[in-house]
Image (tube, rainbow over all chains, first blue to last red):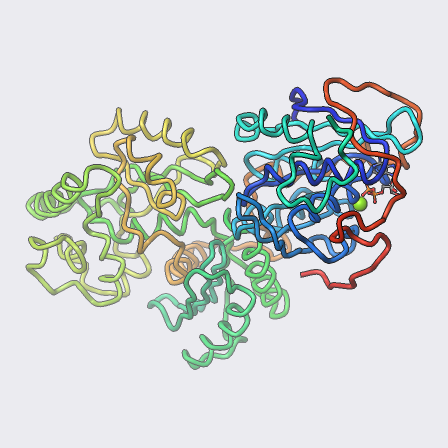
Length: 187
Length: 366
Ligand SMILES: Nc1ncnc2c1ncn2[C@@H]1O[C@H](COP(=O)(O)OP(=O)(O)O)[C@@H](O)[C@H]1O
Ligand SMILES: [Mg+2]
């Protein structure tokens, strides 16, 4: 994995708190972006994805795509960037980087899509170009998570300020108003 | 005579062709649109039907192994390997960059052998796959100097007018000339340097179209000078600029990556080959396959795989990460952010659009 300084570190104290951070970061993505979600099983990657998707107007339930590998969700509110589809992927069951490349995410996101890739931190080399990494780690208390957001690559590094602002203020960062309800104490 | 079945799926176009040492028998192509799954299997059937050849009469399966669009390659390579395994046939894997270069070489006037070509495939997300070639004279027969001057002039004129990358290369039509029997037609060189002139320019006696297809009579061939790489277009531009500085003729660039990043490559002094050659073409793939099969360069299907260029051959290092559930109670740091989130119970429908945890959609994998 590429080492880079985190753009933002946020502590959440509930699943909805993590959803709120997801919703806030959804406001900064543009078509073609890939966000990799890192962290152990149960860390909250799918929970983050739920908030992210809800903020872009996805109405279906977002569940772990572990068995489907890649699951597309239509966005009803793509925000300023015009994101029409979220490709929710999980590479946990794959063993070779080639298999991740075969998913073709780098190409699929070209169709006005963004990709959220659970466990994607192991596959950054084949995802090509820039990715934004969101790592979830257990915090000190029950239900607490540390959400560490890192720009891997020059494109995301250039957007660091926007990402930081969004991550710090999830309640105000969303474009849809459909998520982040519990994030008002964010700042 | 060796009959090859060629399958092309490295870009958003797809194609299937049947060919032998005398040339193309049949081809099916679909441009853009990423319709690989719908195109390739029916395409195999179609070319067999059109050529009046049964699949079991095929001797070698030729496949483009990329780099390129991996969703398409997966379909094309799996189909090719399936047929090769099923019929017990050897394969010829060809890189997409070689196919692009071969198409340009096929259309080069002899006067232009020795020139640098960079084949560039769009890798998406701000990167390109590329390799460097020298267009060389396959069997090293000199050509008449007069013919050279004429063609060279046409090319320089076009390139000059269009300034660098925008320029349309003359002589590209040679790829078509190869099949349209251009030798013998004369006098078109002065107009555009397009179809017909490339081969007319030669004075070394090629008059048999079979020679031109098989390469037996000597052709401009691409010699690959670098391994395929993935890089940002500006990194490639810097490399091309260096080449342009040391070579007499401006380097040529070809491929959908060169088209997409034309603006980035424009300042390098390179000349872009016309977009009609920007995607690997299945008839050219078949021709390369015939050459290589006749040279004995065949492989066992088991070893044929997509060319990922990046570190994709590696196994994912799960050992370090594959995990137990996170144990609560380690770090509590809060490096710089605020605290978000309240103690709601999970899975409630915050805002109406929130997911219902535990629901199963049952959608199949795409
Ligand atoms: N602050 C929090 N953020 C996210 N999930 C939390 C949090 N606190 C507790 N949880 C629980 O942790 C689990 C996270 O599961 P999930 O999002 O599916 O993880 P992953 O996709 O990383 O395997 C859920 O059961 C969720 O309720
Ligand atoms: Mg999950």
